[in-house]
Image (tube, rainbow, N blue to C red; front, side, top):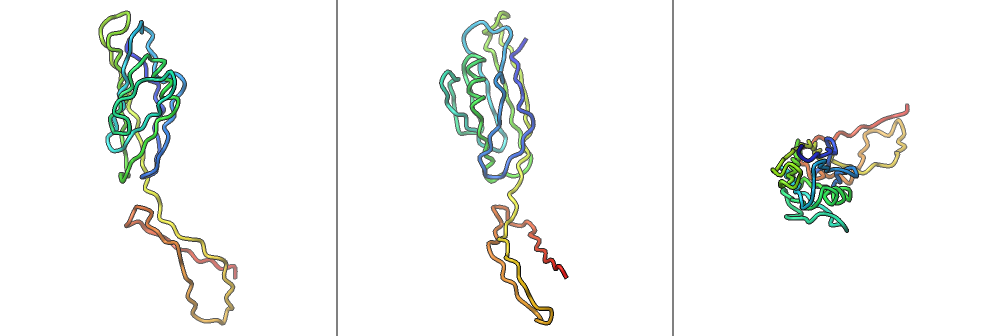
Length: 171
């Protein structure tokens, strides 16, 4: 049987932020593994992946890119993933795909390479526009037309979004 990848499940991320994709303790297993190394390739369509180097973990190739490879025993790869995978979408917002491909390199009782894949969907939301909250204003009923100053209005990296301002009265 090929290596087993336990998916972290579909993810949500914020545009341009460093988001952590968490894996369980045994993210990659191989019941027929004998010795040597296997590889796990993490390939993302629109974002950047960063894996933390840890003691007793896998070796990491092309870190901080869209195509990272971990090499080591299934246990070493799982140890590395348990430390967390950082995902950053950069300027992308929308639906992204992370593909995980495990290759046992033929280091099993079957002696021929076996490969397995998992796909993780990542929904990258644009950060909403912001506005500073105004303090409560007390305006006399007969005061006439009033101007209220607004501040701290930002597009938050997503120009073209609608910002709604609501005024409420208790009377």
